[in-house]
Image (tube, rainbow over all chains, first blue to last red; front, side, top):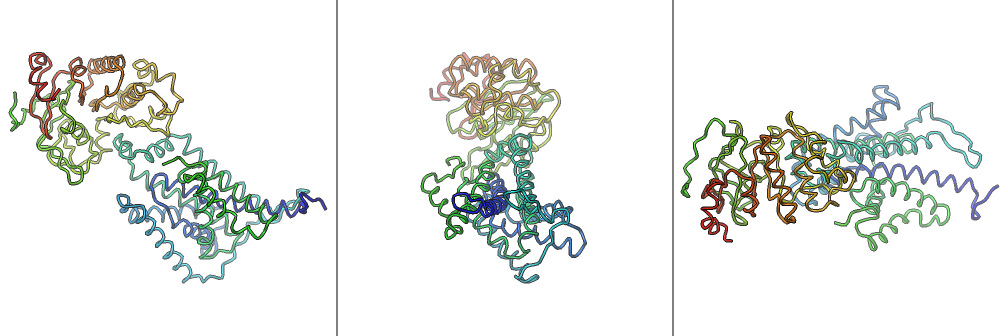
Length: 295
Length: 245
């Protein structure tokens, strides 16, 4: 069997793929956090719960309504995003004039409530969600076996991340968003409905989390706690990439997934902590994050 | 000359903006104390006064970007106090803030295109470039990489696109080289000849004198005097007393 640096090639590529998949979730989730933080100045601690809701809404659509994976991939983010917009309008919007800490406490509390409700209703053992038939099975690439669904997760996340980057950096709507991030008062004084822009942005960031949740449903068990396990790592990713940087969130998400995967191959003991070690180093050397603008 | 008690100017048919008994606050601090003045369509009027007199606050109050305001600001007969700034902008009023408000994360073109068109008849990009040729060469530069003068041109150029007919310009010549100041003054005269109505906040009354029809003197949050531009020469002594220069 072929070996690379003394590691069987199949094992190496297998872990790299796993790293890429984790990276895809890190990127999509940290991107949503970055978009929300940029405009709302709120660290959205509900993000993990909203990712979990995406997976659950996908599961519910299938179980209760017979709506399959592909429609759910569109519907679940819309539903979760809409719930997010209601939360923003009714609760978060009251906190913009207060210290950051209040937004953090509110969204953290909401995460606990949402997770509690789902735990109450569905337990913690996890619910199965089948891989859609079109994507079951896999292909042998010669050097490794690629399960189709996992390949799809990477491609779909990458496409969604790049589309988000394009919208924010290259379109007129994105220019409104960037401008409102810098100076909402002036943008409003030009006649643009900034509160609506804020609500839509929050809804969009949350929808990204919901989308990641549906993508995750067939890989990880649909479980009320699936978000809180992931979100801690995602926050580390955001700190490393730099709060509020769009491209930074994407690049950092995918790279850290890969680094984590490589660590699993070469020094498995550190796999769970490597991201936090990198976070600590980045905080020491470049506190604003690798892609962050100095405050 | 009006007394400090400010009899309300008689509103006439061509009054575009009528400000009456305007009070405004930043948090707890009461900045405008019964501001009152009129602007007629097509006029260029300056607000002159010392630092902290309330000139910038007056523009911000008209634009609705201040914590709290009371009194009356009528634009084309409709009341602006109580409206959110985005609705005020949609009525055809555009503001160029003192700090210019050029967005660092937008390039020059995006900065220019940012304010939505609120009424027909705004400048085309070509007309803006004709007025400010510098901008055309810098279209893809980051907005804040421009020189101060170019940033000022960008800040004014982008509100000309919107079709707004009442322009609030807050110290457009501040900190600029004399040749650029001349260029801006020339531009203001040109806009006036095109029928724009302009309220100009200025510290530099020599520049203001070359463009304005009338001057309101602002002191401690109210208008204390009005000087027609023709009387400016004769009123120099008075003006120096007001402005403390």
